[in-house]
Image 1 (spheres, helix red, strand yellow):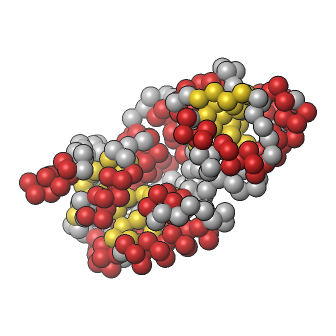
Image 2 (cartoon, rainbow, N blue to C red; image 1 turned 180 degrees about the horizontal axis):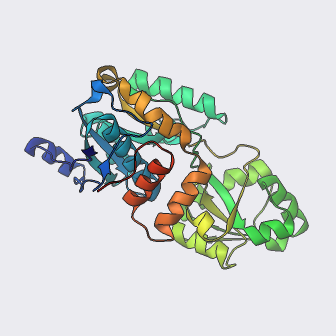
Length: 323
């Protein structure tokens, strides 16, 4: 049995972390026993620091990685909940963390500086994988089906009433019912070319009214009828919690944001076994799974560490908690 260790940094490392606005976290307080993830002799006692960004989905997958690697025998340090993508990326590049989960669209657009996304998931992954390794020495492990991209959402009742399953359905509906084109979006999304202006052009619809809110208020606005359609993220737990329907982006306008484990190439070469430990977890994740896990945290108020542990146990990756 192993316990996920608390992150204990040296003074020098702490100075680097402080400069990035990072703080070490308390360890996940669970005893971890092997399940289908068995002890890996080559990882026995190897210290690995896992990082994540500071939103629910990232914290959940960060804990999943910690539990998986701990079951494999590694001494895991926790640095989840890093504020902002840029700090998370910097922590990985400088070695303050050894691995994290990242999104293909974020890598391609935000980190590598491309303006045009690649519509095909596999091709988008391959492009960011190859370029990030060549330019930055960062290794992307095979991607997951989980794809946290943008979409338009409406209530399940409204979608069923008007037979709306895709953005094309929505466009056709709004042609016949232009007064129903009330949208809630974030301020930035309203003006970005990869946001509302671009998607309007691709599908050919014209909103009657656009209301701008913060992300959380958009979900509430859809649910309470403030708007008929809203900008959402496809894996958000509030989709299930508020009985929302996700409209398919059938023309593939929005970038692909499949999640994958990323680590430095030197770490991968030293410990290639990390891939065999993490890949079953990545392959078990999908949008429906994450929506339900996020609901438990964001709607039901459960602790993300407990939610991640329960999911890992339910999938058989680790044994039941005996603490």
